[in-house]
Length: 81
Image (cartoon, rainbow, N blue to C red; front, side, top):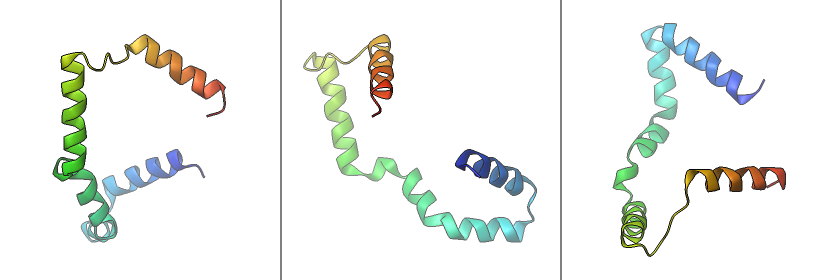
């Protein structure tokens, strides 16, 4: 069974599962959820985002437009990357 199917089955199950089972599942993944939801507490990430934003605003980084990004992604995909 592929990951997409598993995700859908879990999603469907959790919607109708009783409270005890939902709490048990949550207990298993609670730490991962907390880490995922608190990305803004990662000082190095925030510093990097601030630098990227400043570089774009100042013109030090020209960025990439949407069409160029799509072209690069398609090129990488076709190269087997």
